[in-house]
Image (cartoon, rainbow, N blue to C red; front, side, top):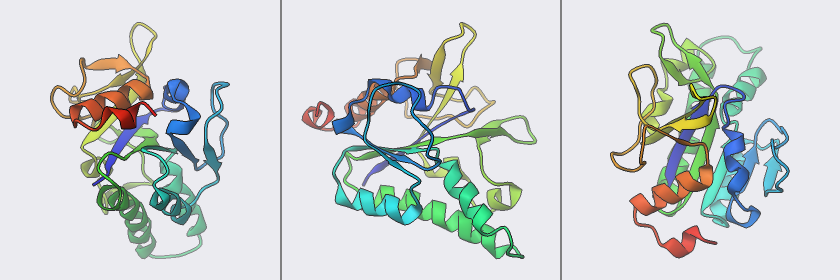
Amino acid sequence: MGIAVMIMGESGSGKTASLRNCKSQELKIFNVANKPLPFKRKLDVINNIKYKDITNELEKQERKLYVIDDSQYLMAFHMFDKAMEKGYDKFSEIAQWFYSLIKFVINKLPEDTIVYFLHHTEVNDMGKTKAKTIGKMLDNQLTLEGLFSIVLMAKINDDNKHVFVTQSDGCSTCKSPMDMFPALEIDNDLKAVDSAIREYYEFDKFEIEL
């Protein structure tokens, strides 16, 4: 089974910038909102992509590393398409499409294929930072983080450094397996994160160093 990883964070927190050390031949980026990369390195990017196009690309199994940036726009754009429809069924449909994409990654891809969902955050009524959705109606249908075993949070720490947080301090929904990462805060380097995950699950190193 494939691995779905969520990397959540505010706009400008370093989610997309974390791809800076990756090489074009080792990953494919699904750019939902057609935004330019925040660095000069040229990577393999498909712009303005939709759900079915993502699954079609994943089915080709051309890479072991994929990135969906920014994945919350899949729900937001879907909601805009349904804006004129009345009733609550549309929220169930939007939740089902996103759920189905995650389950496709987990159930249909090889075990050493990792798909990273770069996702914006929001703060709920309890003051906890969580993955952004399109509102409480969808939250009642789907708890996003519950579908991921690894949820990292991009942020700028007290030293003004871009980092990934690997475990929750009670104020966020971050989580990762014990001993997967060396510290509560690590550098926001997706290449290093990918290597740590593959080492933890003992995937073939040859597949890492394409």
